[in-house]
Length: 132
Image (tube, rainbow, N blue to C red; front, side):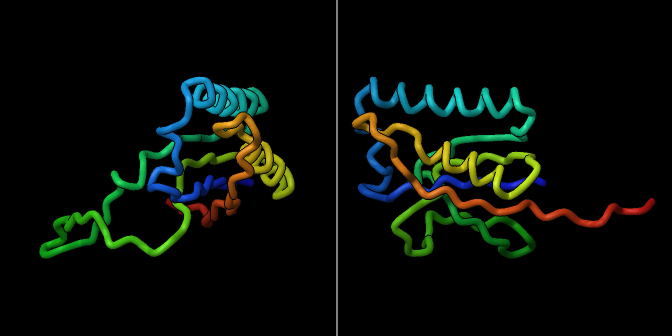
């Protein structure tokens, strides 16, 4: 079963403050995430994972005239959180995905304590195979 684990970060000053962390705290956070990904990869569970750019760099795109993209810098839905990154994992059960999400949620923050950020877990839908 494939699941998408989405890490939601608080908006704070727009970037959840990570740009203001000490280099040591930021390195500890990144090392934690790299170790998590390495372990998931060695277990054969990791399909993909990426961190996302800050919300200020996000754009809204709609189909305009003749299908051409109309790109704006908002408006975005009002929210106190934003999507900071994601993992796609292939595991045996929802419980296994929940355990991975809990581990990701425990990544260290600026003071070295677990951030306990919300990780949204959603199963990746499958469709019936297409017959040739």
